[in-house]
Length: 148
Image 1: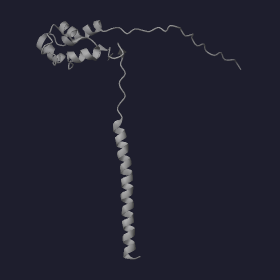
Image 2: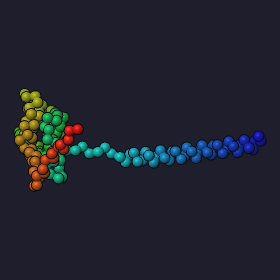
Image 3: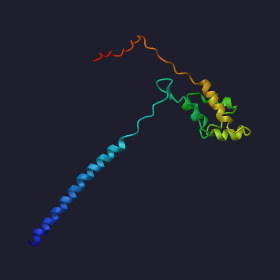
Image 4: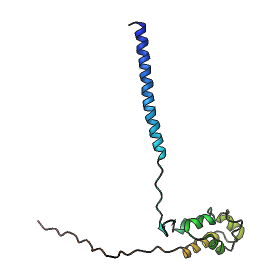
């Protein structure tokens, strides 16, 4: 085999390798772009008070790191009601967590702020209603089997 033929074969194999790597590289890049466009599905709300604002009804999920505005928005209760229940002015205290509010305003009673907020939320949350259909459905009767 001559030197020119060997060089041509080597050059052809190098070009074939570059084309193959480019082809699969572009496919991988397209798959990555499509993968990045996906997001996790939204978490379904536990209770829906209105069509626009879903709220979480379980007050036992409240923790001491949460702030009053965060709890207010999450549970659908006006922040003024929560601040009034704690006997605290909202001015300057919006960014403080329940633990900080408890240490500053209720120092002799650890955990009292969380318990007060939970109690107020239980009282002020709206109760979900059950919608009864206008025309009741007849119950489905089981199919009777014929003995063999």
